[in-house]
Image 1: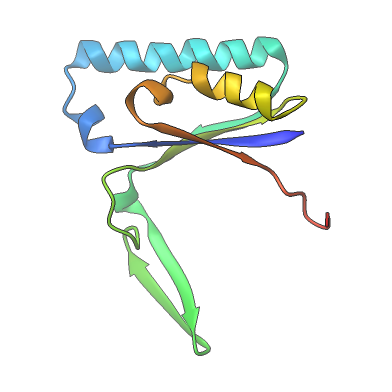
Image 2: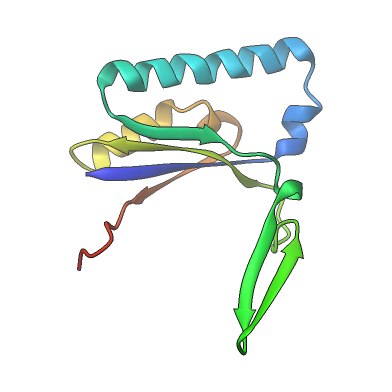
Length: 118
């Protein structure tokens, strides 16, 4: 079953870290990604640009509104994701706990609801 691991963190903290700490954090994500690939369970993954670069679209009363930046105010923002295919929720939770983002932010684990599935 596919699960999305959504990594939420305070992006300003990463930007204010010393370069050595940034390098260590990125290396930890590299090792984690390698472990997912070796296990053969990763389907997709990417980092996202900061929320300040987002554009939000919504339609109200038939009118499209386009807003610059994220729509909600929050310290933690979605910073990236891993789409994994594992046997069950327990396996997904185990991989989420190993994600470096769990140590400095939050990793939301959500089952994928395939299009057309009930």
